[in-house]
Length: 336
Image (tube, rainbow, N blue to C red):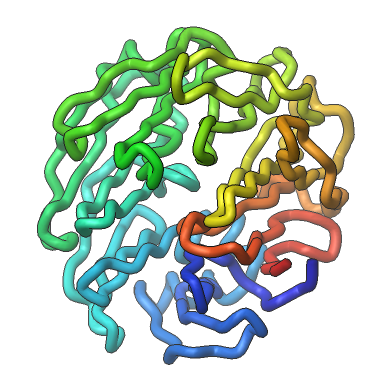
């Protein structure tokens, strides 16, 4: 693995990686050279806060998601606002009014036909509000609430992902045992089938795909339960625990060549082995360590120590990830 560029890797395509630096975004090649102009969104104040890593992480500022659309536009999220930006940098549409600062890391999805999905993610400690799933079928011009979880059903939506093997959508929620659900839709989000749930083994912040399995790491960061790396058979929907994890799993990526990676993080929970984030590859059903990096000296309220993959990993064989809040890697992109 080699260092590529400072910033956040948000989306990867066959020949380029979309990078955010504060409120600025652009694409680079696999050597870190820009292949697009630099564009920006947000107010002057947001841009100023976003220029410094510490201030943007503390205030949850900056661009958090970016997904290209079939039209050539890009859909991106910042704090409490999402945008559709044209290929020449013009802001066409904005989307506000949803709950929370931003979706979960894998809480935004664009299907091959250009449909955009957006799941609400809030702290919701009292479980006193509903959680919504939004959809846009007109390129982000408008969004409709297509599914509502009542306040006593889930805390928030963790992810929504398109499955290139089964040609369907998967959605996950959390956090308590009864709130951890895995749902599947084969009709573009119109209806959802419950596949599993009811324990911390179903608490995933994202999922990975290969031909035979869905793989994830559990995100039990606020409870004493042992975290696991798990896969689910596509045929039987039965779970198999591949290994214990040293901490909550904050990242996962599955690639065009079938490789699957899981990352663990540091958030100060009682079930963590140490202060190291780890990257593991699943080989023959077993997680194999690739690298580990120690948490930096900054407080956890600023940024957990995590390794995250960009969206779009299924488009490429090149492994790209971002280290956050780790020693000498406060916000740094790496490439295989």
